[in-house]
Length: 149
Image 1: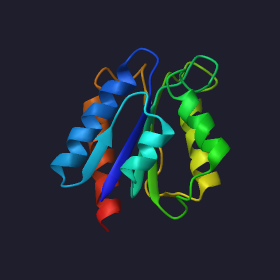
Image 2: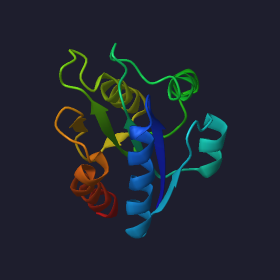
Image 3: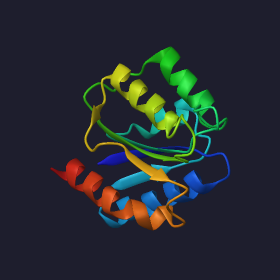
């Protein structure tokens, strides 16, 4: 199964988590692919069977600048991905009212595209964790199990 890992990061943490997720999914036997600042054309060329988005949230609850162009292009073109499995891993700071807001935006986009959320969105709180890659591992295992089911 080909899994596209999309990522959006303000300070680089979400990119690190996305790269870690790619390694974890590959170790589980999946054809995982992550490219920072991927274009929709590159994503379509990969022809994914499933999607994982790892994103941080700006202070205003918005998508990071490096994910916004892809998000906008997907919303404009609405690729035929209905029924494919997907999940969102969101990083944020619970001291903000818009905690993990970009993750919610991606979930809404997934729903608009007809993607199936196979595990509930993971919200990692920067005020509670200093090891988001490690903290995400059990959730990633559940994501892999859902994809293989």
